[in-house]
Image 1 (tube, rainbow, N blue to C red):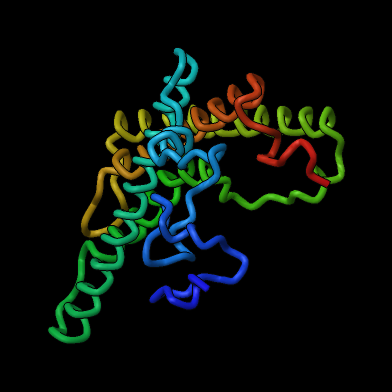
Image 2 (tube, rainbow, N blue to C red):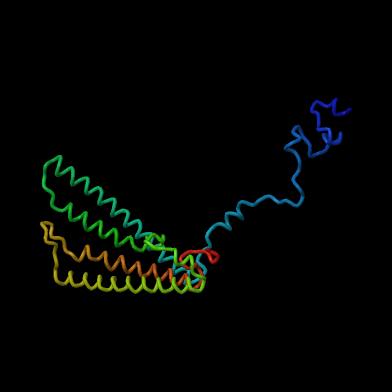
Length: 229
């Protein structure tokens, strides 16, 4: 009877004194108190958990420095590609709009494109962007997969160290011999050749960081989960 007299009728299965309880208000649907065993989610704790932990030791700091250097190489490589595109646009404007000859543009674009490719090697390795086939690692068990990953990284370090060493030797030889490009611009060749030791040297360091992360269980072989396939 009291439900019929109330300005806000309550559901028939609720007691008449529900409207007088402290937790009740104008909206029956949204004013139910939460269960006593449910605690609100602390956004600060969730964000703190999701944030990456800072380096915990010398090895973590060493790996973080190498990763930072690889990211800087990625920025430098992208910048060199962008500058090459601008030079190409300037070349087209000079030759086909102003009908003037070009002297340095073609050679500069060639050196910048090659240099950007070499300087970007460690960043691509950091992102695991090099061409690879994951079919064999997927079918291997964890032990065999770990062995294959170690051998792959050791081969990568050996090859990058070899190219870096001979690249540095080439730079020294070009500098001491005064080598110049056979063009009107006559660029000292030791300058573009420096991309060889820098790119492959930093690629070696990135392989080394990946190797250390793998053997210390900071990463998994080929970045695959242990239960993959």
